[in-house]
Amino acid sequence: MAKGVVQFSITNDASDYVLSIEDEDGNVREFCLSFEQLDLMQEAIAEHLDTDLERALAVDGDEGDDDA
Image (cartoon, rainbow, N blue to C red; front, side, top):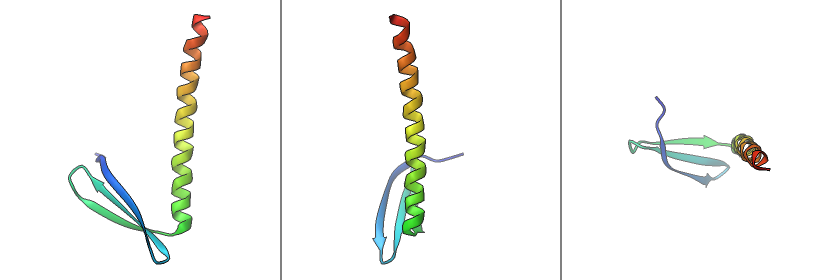
């Protein structure tokens, strides 16, 4: 089962970035990422959030049309 994320941080370590993720049990995992990997991660997150926002706005918009 997936665990919840309590906090995360991104730091720059010379030429790479270090992504630290703490789960709800207090365990911390660290990952080394290149600029390109971090950029791809950011794009994937933005894409998912944009899709979710579009769906939410579509649902809100559909509800408003019924009142007219």
